[in-house]
Length: 169
Ligand SMILES: [Ca+2]
Ligand SMILES: [Ca+2]
Image (cartoon, rainbow, N blue to C red; front, side, top):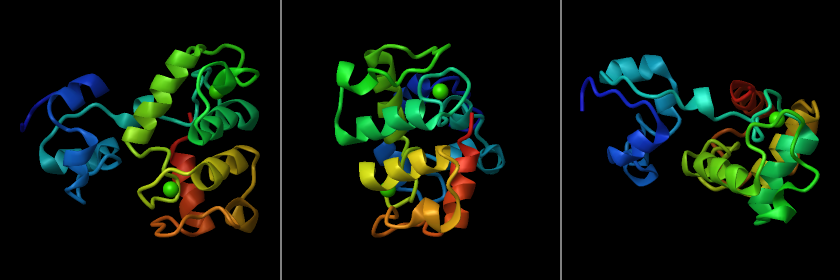
């Protein structure tokens, strides 16, 4: 595996690095592959998750609460198809259809990108709410109160702001 070069999520998963396998190694989980310095330590050249996964769900270059945030929380509530996307896809979208947005959010979930509080579960009224509040510009206690899940590994406003900040498009 050393020196392997993965250019896409598809190649990465095809090589056997599905969510189950790399999550078993706490030093090399889904988010670790986003950090090139970590990858260099392991001798891998890998596709950078954060190059593709961000809060910009519709792919128009910005993260908006009533577009990307709404898409995210609707998806986490289980909405699909027209009920997922109606009125929530931004101008200039590059992911514009329900199918494209469902695929993108499914990949984000598989990589645990949308697990904002880091408790290894994705919940609309926790992770989704944190995302929407952040995109509305909330910080500190107004960002996190009542929205951090049991078993969080990112539990404070500072930790959650830093993580969401790393996912800005
Ligand atoms: Ca967007
Ligand atoms: Ca979570």
